[in-house]
Length: 115
Image (cartoon, rainbow, N blue to C red; front, top):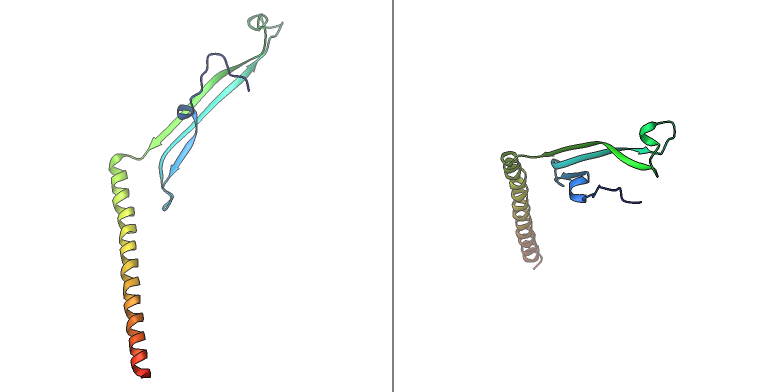
């Protein structure tokens, strides 16, 4: 597509995105952006358009809606969610250790009973 004269798109400023925390699905940041254009063609019957040499795409509306989680909420979210995930990892390691100790104790007991 041909660039529009006078407009210089910047992906960081013009793209739509949704930043989601992968474990909980909680939206951390978003930007919804939309531009509406019309195609203006030369027209002999319309005074303002009869001197146009070629068709033009003219932007008529730009919508920009953004949102970000606040610092206080982000800290609370980080403490509650990631803290519990870390605790879950610790519980997993403790249970794995208990399982290994029980397995070794069972094997020692089994070998002692067989001999």
